[in-house]
Length: 115
Image (cartoon, rainbow, N blue to C red; front, side):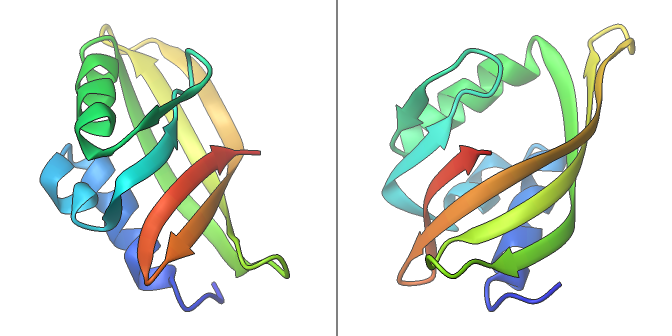
């Protein structure tokens, strides 16, 4: 793992996996852009991100673990993750790797996209 943002990214995924919304939001810009992974599009702002996650967690149980974090030449940070998504009954909906691309501003998450 080789990025100056590794610590922030690890804290963000840990907070997400433990459903500690406020811990993750503290790492984000107020007007953060975040993808709606299973719906398409983005939400904008911390309040919308929190609402989107809470809705998502009421329907599915995702766990996401970073396995590789690298700084890209364009200034963004690419994070390869192991992602396990189950329905609320424990049935696996997705089990595989995905790439998340983060944009930072002043050491705060400004945007995340799914590659």
